[in-house]
Amino acid sequence: MRAILLTLMLLAGCATAPVAVLRSPQVDAPFAFNGRVLIKHGSQRDSSGIHWEHHVRDEILLLGPLGYTVGRIGRDSRGATLEDASGKQYAAGDAESLMQEALGWQLPLSGLRYWVVAQPAPDVEFRSERNASGQMTVLRQQGWEIRYSRYAGSAPDALPKQLDMSREGFSVLLQIDEWQAQ
Image (cartoon, rainbow, N blue to C red):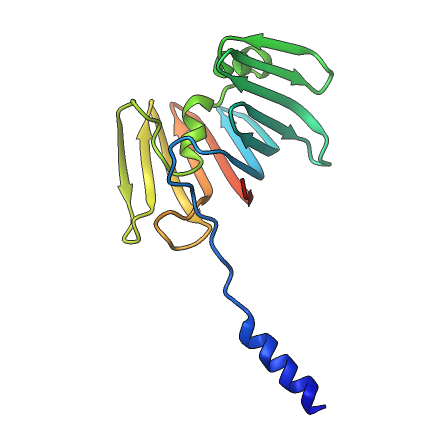
């Protein structure tokens, strides 16, 4: 019995606090996450699960309530593609106009790939606010206001867990449930 108690005490002593997921110091570094997105535009509301992998190419899956794929967006330097749930395929020079054509709304994917990791898009004017820990709390860029309300930890380079983006009557709430190591 003593051996078991001693072993449990040693194991408890080895436990560590959860480690916050930190962003890479590189601008436009690869990332992947799973989460949920709620989009409001006037009286229209859409929600979806989201899985986003950003490397040289962006691969974004929009997921229905039971995990099935409602849309697949691919984006790289050559342009963007979108495949909807019925298998219909769309292509355009950029993801924003493609989403508008196929879905009736758009996300600012060119800036969003930086904003999800709490960085402003490079070479574009921005204004920002930070909290006492050095974390971005508000970012204003390309006509969007992005509010960061939760992070994966308290370190200045912890990754965001919740973003609330708004622009001209259009709002997007992005809840990131899981960051995946790249």
